[in-house]
Image (cartoon, rainbow, N blue to C red):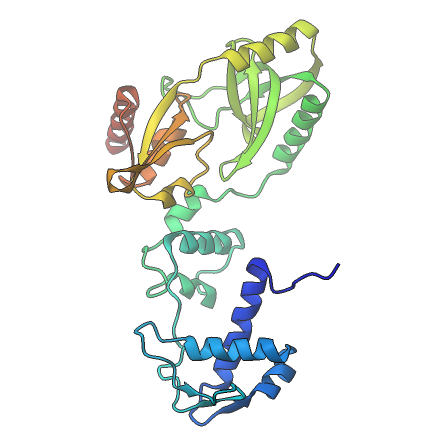
Length: 322
């Protein structure tokens, strides 16, 4: 069955590229392009060429002034009555905060040198968010180590084979109730594996603590699989599914902060509060992850949970004292 190559987002991108080619050809005063030439150069039908030419005549500079282009009633040609000055190709597009963050993250992951011309794309007027590099270094995941890859393989095999895991764990983030992070022996039943900007993680039922816990793969050492009994599997599944998570409420005053981090298990419950505020709930496991990310949003995310508010204040106080 024949497919429409101009459908969806890819079709829109192709159309935009063709329009840019035509604009560049008509950027000089007196430039002339016939419809037949458009068909030949862009490999389009007569109707498609006519549509592209009509779209160009419909464009403006953003101030309701049309481009200096003219044609006849049949759209058989386009003529530039004046130069595109300032040229559209000399204008640098302004990026949204989300787009700028994505670009900065890509350049950081590719280890693009600071003196590269690409880094200039992150400066004004393209980006108005200021220097994004310190923020990007906090959220972009570093390269996965060989040890982390090996742990991922062992955990995956254990999960697929319904086997338990025993390992020594070096917490990536200490509990807010602890003064120091020390290696801990863990005996768990793996439940599922996840990955986000913070790295690969294992969600598992901890038999010693009788709770579901999340472990960073990079913090696991001496990982070994152990056969699981039927009672252990039943106990892990039933307890983890019935366990009540500590849920807290978060408020966002801008939807872009919903995608700024991978808010694990975040659930939006209201998005039409006064002032465009979005209300959501998220599990809180008493680690520094959630307080750190709330504070990183610079006041655009907050909570009404008394315990979390106290923890946030205490977290800031400790950082100021160091």
